[in-house]
Amino acid sequence: MSVADDWIDQLLSLPRDYKAGSKSLLQLIAEIEPPHLDSGEFARRVSERLRRSPELIDAWQLYSYDKRTTSTPYLDGLEVGFFDGERRDVVEHGDAVDACADFVVRETQSLLRLR
Image (cartoon, rainbow, N blue to C red; front, top):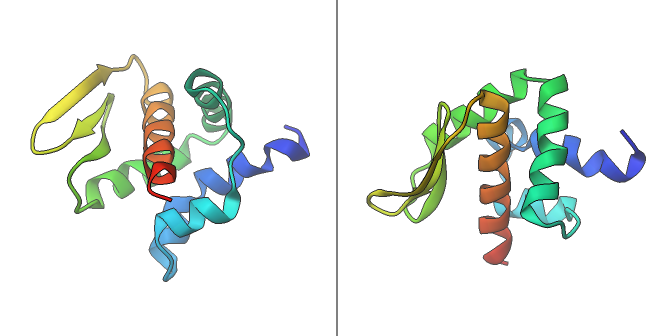
């Protein structure tokens, strides 16, 4: 991994940083300033990193389960979608890495639109 991809490590550690600190996930993501990538490239880079550290998937799953907002992306095992009172735009992935990468991309893009 190049120095230019250090933001991926920072991004993927956010659920732990969020739980331990006083900043919102939006504030933490804004501090990282992820590069503008299309969704496919973003997901590819996140998947590569998650395959090397699959323990990060559990942190993202717990973060998703702990969310108390509506109109938000969710991760439920291999299922990823958007919840706004009912599940929408649902995708069932073949493995946990791809599901988590999809969720991280959706969550990051959703939060960055709020800035």
